[in-house]
Amino acid sequence: MELKCDFQVYHPLGGASYVFEHDIINYILRKSKKRKIVISVGAQPNSSPHFGTLCVFSLAFSLAKMIKEISGDKEASVLFEVVDTAPSKTIEINEIKYQKDLKDSNKMKDSMNDFQEILDYFSEKNNISYSIRNQNAFNSQKEIKNILKNIISKQDKIRYLLDPDNGRLRMRCTCPKCGLVDKEGINTTIENDIIKSICPEHGEYIVNYMKNSNRVEYNTPLRNLVRAILYGIVNESSDYDYEIIRITGGDYAGFYQEELLYKVASILGYKVSSLPMILYCPQILDWSGAKLSKSLYVKEGAYSDLPKYVINYSFLKEKFGIKGLDVIMNETVLWLNEPYRLFRNYSVYYFINLFEKGRL
Ligand SMILES: [Zn+2]
Image (cartoon, rainbow, N blue to C red; front, side, top):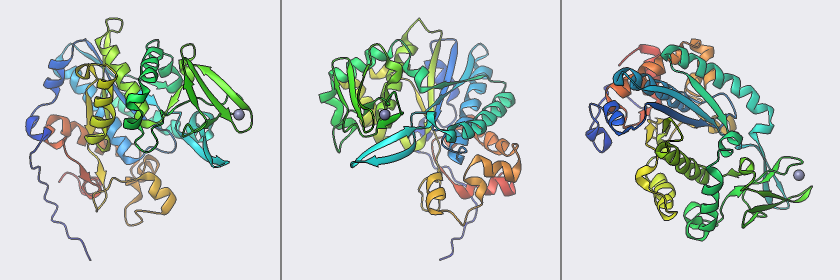
């Protein structure tokens, strides 16, 4: 079968694209209570950033710039939350999965160079500053220990919501001697203020999370929950002169957040209306409508029919130079100026056409 395409682009309205057809910035400004706005993005630096991540980062800087320009009196910046507790490798010992964190690997150092280069480029182009925060710094914040205490005390109400298969609260700490961590929490128990775990080589170790919250790590749904609760507290608190808006990929929109974030936060006693705004970046989809996956490309040789530059930043730079990022930036500015373009996804062919033939 040969796929044919007439390259006509339509934007049928529906849902958010209908409500926010012409404006999103003024809506955001009306909701904001503080003068400084921080746009938060996150990524696991395990390789050169994939195309979807470039779109998320570009959208964050474009949003910050437009908030500044349209408000006239707001400050805006970008915060990159580095998920350096993601696995650099996973090993199985006695049928239990352990991981080594990215923060302890060379993989992260290499890919952070690319992230840094992209952030510097977007920062300079948009005249917007940015900061980088790792998980240790995130978890060192004074509010975290009480958030954890609350989650742990109510764990029986939420653990099957966050982990429907096993009902485990996936909070964990690395072995202080070798850095291995019990990925699925099989040998990890949480009682009172103590997280107790077992290293296959060094035996039992404990972490008092009320004293050392910086050492606690989470799986993705739990990290998503803790982060949203913390941002909500920061946004409401006069201790902080800024408020946070998150941007993340559209694959997390909808059912995931409703079931794993908003309902769980509500069960834990947090006001859902105080949780931060999350703006979802359009996903870049393959011919079948699945999101482009960098790991499928690496592990299984997927997308051999596509030009490599839609896979990750290093290929994009190889083909177009760092200026290739301008194509993405022009697009994210357009999404915000005409937000009916923001609340939808794009096929990879849409972007290939932008790169090779210019605007449709
Ligand atoms: Zn160990």
